[in-house]
Each structure stands twice: as structure tokens, then as C-alpha cells.
Length: 113
Image (cartoon, rainbow, N blue to C red; front, side, top):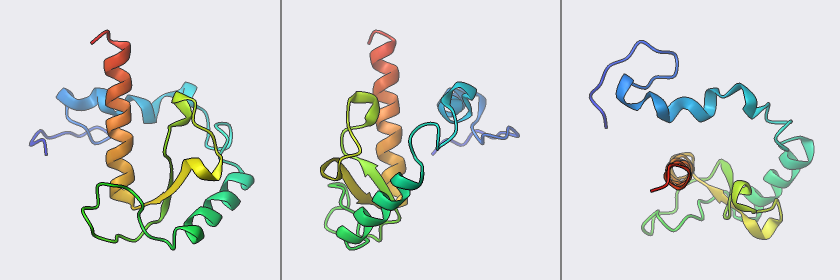
């Protein structure tokens, strides 16, 4: 956890403000423009039910956390699909950590590291 303080809307200190860029990017489009429409919401409900509303990530260390979100195992940005086999129920915290790790990896690959 960063001890830095901020007054910005995105909640990141100056040293970490670059982490907020993806969510505030106006070119990103709305959820429906990115493919998360009524069909996605229906599929999401099916996946949550299939996975018994329990987190399916490998990082829960044996705990069975309640799942409220659905994650792409292979991200759409890396060619993953909305096929049920590429979707898993996840706990909100686990999903956030996975998304942050994927975003950091994408930034590293585009920066030439």
C-alpha cells in the first residue's frame, strides 16, 4: 500500500497516477460498446451459477471466497473469447488483482522491457 496522499478523483497519488489511465481513457468506450451488453449479462449469470458463486482463481490458497464477477481466463486483449470455457467466476478482490497484473504486463510489453 502506498502512503501517498491525493485529492484527485481517481484516488491515486502523483507517483501512481499512471495506474488510473486505463479506466479514465475516453477512447475506451462504454461497457456495451466493449461487448458487455444483455447477452454478456446473461452469460455472466450462467457462469456464476455454473461455478456455484465461488471464486475459481488459483490464488485463493484453498479458501472458497464468494464470487460476484466473471473473468476472462485469457483476456480479450490477448485473443481470449467470451466462450464459456474461457470464463470463470471470481471474487471482486481476486479479479481486481488479476486485472492489475494483466495491465502491468501489458504496459511492460509496450514499453520495451
